[in-house]
Image (cartoon, rainbow, N blue to C red; front, top):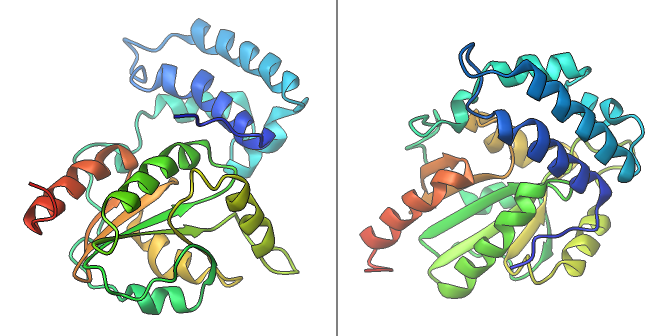
Length: 244
């Protein structure tokens, strides 16, 4: 299943993760950290960035508060963020949520509209520039295809902060249409006040996207990384008799 994207920024960020995040994921203590390997990876990243058309990679990374490669190194050496560790739990687990009400203030752009019939709901907060989001989308599409009418998969796009003209809904719609094999589930775009982000996503305290939120009968059962989401989903599917 292909996860390639024609978006240069998404490819740039994926390159950053592949060269300066994943290789150092578990090497943050003094016994395993390799300073020389880090700076060799930085030089490789600079070369790759130029090949992608980004002569000043820090201009892009600064959007994520990475203003220098020393800053990126310091972040890497802090270790895996708590919210990405297996036993981390979002503080909103167990809360009740009205998904229909949440979506009322967003823009529907693709697929059927959610009508609240499914007992199991998966919310996918994502952005067009996010490589991991594009990787998980086909898997979520397969999930929606496998359990129509029983599991509702709903994407909520939140591409950064809206500009003075408001969030470009048509741009996101065009992106989904161009990548329609990946996005075969209901899709919405957050409004210019970031309603869904502020009322739900931010409260999960999960600091990354994609952020997947699993809801059963209006109760939040999981919120966080796609890496651990599937385990919780399997438990819910079995408990509801959807899957043996």
